[in-house]
Image 1 (tube, rainbow over the protein chains, first blue to last red):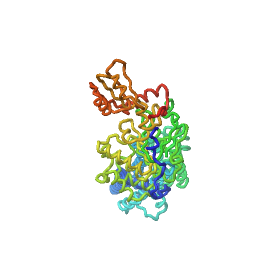
Image 2 (tube, each protein chain N blue to C red):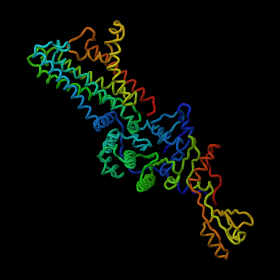
Image 3 (cartoon, one colour):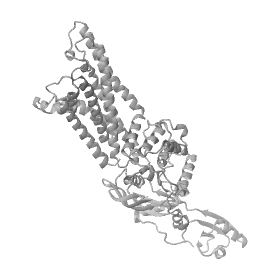
Length: 281
Length: 309
């Protein structure tokens, strides 16, 4: 006789009443929110983003003020500066910090291996991506907007009494400041999506810099007719259209700029979703 | 309950898991054994849906893992590769998992206590030793109070105390009626906790058996005895279920089915002088090795061919 029957247990499931847990979208969102804020790099990068957004505008404003004060020749950059345009010197640097953070948030899961924990908890996977981009989009938008307003108030104080001074109620000012926040929010989402597509922090940051900074640079090498057709539709230029105070002929209108950037964002997130669902983690 | 049916995973040319069929039942510890690279980790990753099977299916509690509304309550898994962000504290890591299912904070504290992580729960996990990392992984596996606990090489990097702790934990989880599925490449470790064994090699199923059957099929325990009158001793020892072999005229006999102690006693009772009495235990390790060696040629699965009387 084999003794298997002695050792094989009854197929009883635990009889203790077990609590009923359930995964919901809201809970996944809550989890991603908690994950975002529970690593030190988040706090450091957020601080850097705010410093860039507020600090660079302040420096620009101080330089403008000193040039106005003296009789020296005024730099071309400052010729028709406003407190909004001075503030927005920080946007380029702020987007770098927020882009890096977005990549870290998404690709960091893969480089550290925590994606395995995440996806065993949420094996349907897509709710993780939706939550990640929602959390990060909102965070980047809020930081961008807070930075823009704080920078504007500071810059405005510095340049008060000069031609650059503006009031919040002046035409386009609110749109520009919120536009900067919107741009940073969407660009943050694009960065997170790139991180999720490439699953590598280094790769994600490189791709982000390429999209935002290199491609617009490369474009200037193309024939002028191409430039005017393609140029305005690049993510960075579409963004420019959203937050620039005075409309420029080579840019889209703010509304269309926002739509184009939103289109890029949707494209990036769709790519990330496809990659998340179709590939082994 | 884990059920794999013709489960297969190919990476390009390489077949990591090749048509696996097995069932892991609740209430017992089932060891998942195989040499390194046998496809154990890949199989476990497919069970929790991290890897998609190339063909075949694997279900947990009757459904694909991803179809469960409360996955962590269905399977708690410790995977071999690190699954924790080093910058996050143990508590925050567990809490992030708990949030997805609405698991209360109290439960997080419970598993921290159960795994002995109280003193380091607020430290960033990157600073953890291998053993503490394993404990955190196990805490995460237990978090959802799962019906199935699946651990990939859980004793890796643990000190003797930790190994003992794991053994007791596994036994206890099985006693609670849970399905416990534990992989290892160490047969000796498995022999201490597992009742049931699923053995794989090169992605194929080699045996779906029990520890006892495996040992018996590999030859069981034998005793070598050298005596002054081996022919007479042979007659004295003979009985049902006892196998005695030896060259005629040689003073050595090989006995299966009796202990050295029993043989010595019989010899003393009949005044036969013994020159040597050696017990050979067929280690599970040897049984395992011979199995994996054979399998490469035959791809056979062990059936209990004969029954011990």
